[in-house]
Amino acid sequence: MTGATMTQITTEPETPATEPERYRRVLVKLSGEGLLGDREFGLDLEMVDRVAGEVKAVHDRGIQVCLVIGGGNIFRGISTAAKGMDRTSADYMGMLATVMNALAVQNALEKKGVQTRVQSAIPMSMVCEPYIRRRAIRHMEKGRVVIFAAGTGNPFFTTDTAAALRAVEMNCDAILKATQVDGVYSADPNKDPTAERFESLTFTDVLTRDLRVMDTSAIALARDNNIPIVVFSLHSPGALGEVLSRRGRFTEIRCDSDQE
Image 1 (cartoon, rainbow, N blue to C red):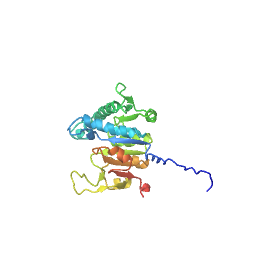
Image 2 (cartoon, one colour; image 1 turned 135 degrees about the vertical axis):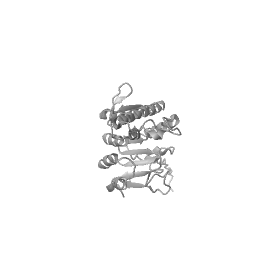
Image 3 (cartoon, one colour; image 1 turned 30 degrees about the vertical axis):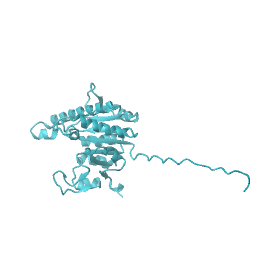
Image 4 (tube, one colour; image 1 turned 90 degrees about the horizontal axis):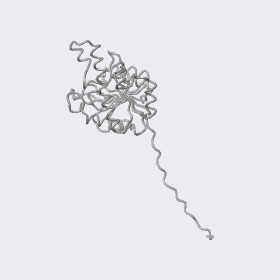
């Protein structure tokens, strides 16, 4: 061997690349009943705070988030109309209930340091912004969470339809529907213990089997614009973040051509 010395070259272990997020922008649909917690009416502030914490965790990952919240915990237009009240008036009252829920969730998010804007389809400039599509998109691009209130602004349309409509208008990559159960079942599992749970479905499956995931207008809007719907349980802590990471229990509804 010559007198030349040999030097040992060491290399630092490579840091694994962070896997890119599956979705860039999502719409989260929350039922009003999901904010009840253990109450029979109104808002459970602990539940609102937990929901806000889960939205913040997703927002902190760099995912743009918008929400549509129902109003069934305060007022349900359809059931009231069935008891004899004018359906149009009942639906407008239900829309106002969604504004109350939106303001509660906004308050909880901003207490956690998340800038949030509420946009209402019924103008009420003293408490929130009017719905303006371009402004809503700009808010999300600036890192703000946007909550859409008052449904579509029209009676006879549910907040499910409002969620699908806003998801299309915002160019969302997915609709995440938080429900009382951990996916889509052939029947209500709380009433029928033999109900079958589905891991994945097509929009055609949902319509032909009459699975009550969302109303048919919402399903048709999502199908026609190729926006998948992911159904999961609001009552499972951390479920929102897990769904976005493709973990946990959920049912995904996609177009027929997207099914493997």
